[in-house]
Picture (cartoon, rainbow, N blue to C red):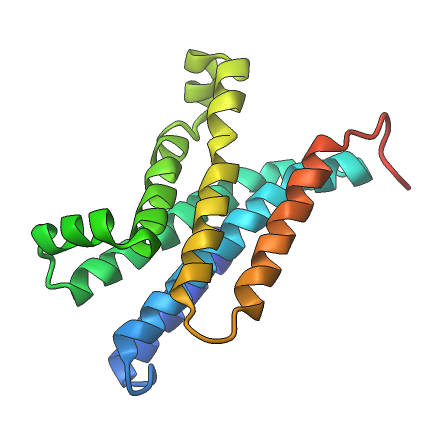
Length: 184
């Protein structure tokens, strides 16, 4: 799981080192890392509905890894953004405060931070399962902010961001739908 999850980052680094990222490598790396973040976050959110609908147990076993990979790619996305702005925190602060697109992305990453920090079994025991579960519902808010960040970041054809938002909405609806037994 971890090897497969790290493969896109390895390819991204390889492409950066070999000049295969095109005319605007920072923009392409930013877009790819952002899309990977959103995709992995939605995949992690799909695990519970998939388990509830099918009765399969394997989605629950990979949910944590998918969430941590989403956080990792979100952090990479943020680091690329900082690199693009010369690692100048004053510029970042101004951007976060004045551009809603950046604010949404920054908040999405901030919401993932406590989830990544409390992703261990020891954290579940320390917080208690109910509290831990409530805390980890922040993943939905983070995904919504991530989808909004993507929507606002696209200047022309917004079909792809709307598809991602529709997938998130579908996952939320499936989350609320609780079958009494797995569907066959």
